[in-house]
Length: 198
Length: 234
Image 1 (cartoon, rainbow over the protein chains, first blue to last red):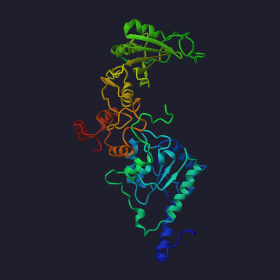
Image 2 (cartoon, chains in turn brown, yellow):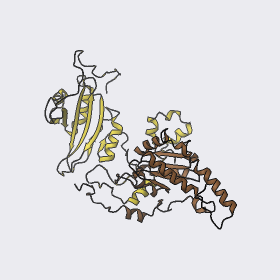
Image 3 (cartoon, rainbow over the protein chains, first blue to last red):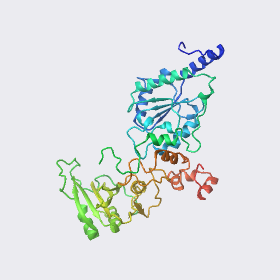
Image 4 (tube, each protein chain N blue to C red):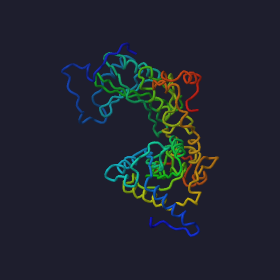
């Protein structure tokens, strides 16, 4: 609790209550594994006895989104799964966080093709991105510790933290369509999109 | 289809002193021993067999489009062939514009330990349609749906020809065709928007429910609604 930042304009009792609540939250994150590919294998390794995320208060894995605090999206998400992932995120009660585990979940990875979502942050808000293909369990543990730091520094007076963050009403996306299109350049209807140039 | 079910064991139709199956060694790329079923098929359907190739020890028979159903039916039914296992239905398109699209059936005869590959060549510009083999092999149902989804080849007589891998509202075309851009035809944001517009629960059709044998267990009211064409989850 020593590295909790004190905020000058807030009463002492609020900051102490924040520190206490955050201490409880960060040490009892219940993860909901959303494993779709090889990252899920590494997640299983992280959950098993050698790396053991139970040390971080993740003893109980929630296989129902309604009882989970933390969504760990491990693996690539095809477009067909996009509405499912968003539904699961909407079913989770606040407070909730999300870790995007691995290159595919974070950016689409090597699957820059017609079937795979280029980063789940288009669909749901993400707190921590864990790079790697797949990340080793240590990588995931580091991501979890970063998330714990983030939880530790939350303040109840900051209401925006716990906003549901509804997607844009028109496009249903969390990133503006223009930004997505700009980031996915070069993009066209050329048939010569293979990397080998053949 | 043959009436009555007689269990068949792998190699069960062979003589009792037949050699045990072994991995072939030193198989030439082209040529070699031809599967005896190819000659027998030629005798049965005649000119409809256009070509017989042997590649890496596996026999490929190129059959006329109009007779392919007869050929596969005969291979399945004939007591000396008994191709009882359909392992794959797929298609091949070549980058060369002149070469026809090939539809491929992989058949295996468990009693005789044989494998044969049946092909149909679909010329450019012709309608991409071949007869279904669903009435011979029930396994063809999803295989043909996948082939339709990826290549746009229609299987005449298929009971439920819908997309299977891509979602049913997918409008960008057939992903494994050579003229399909790797990243799809629409922009990334449009692809996401269309994907998110789908209702993930409204996906079980009457057929899928009856396949799962869940239908009989449903309450009467739900049966009535399903029969009226309503989809679940809506």
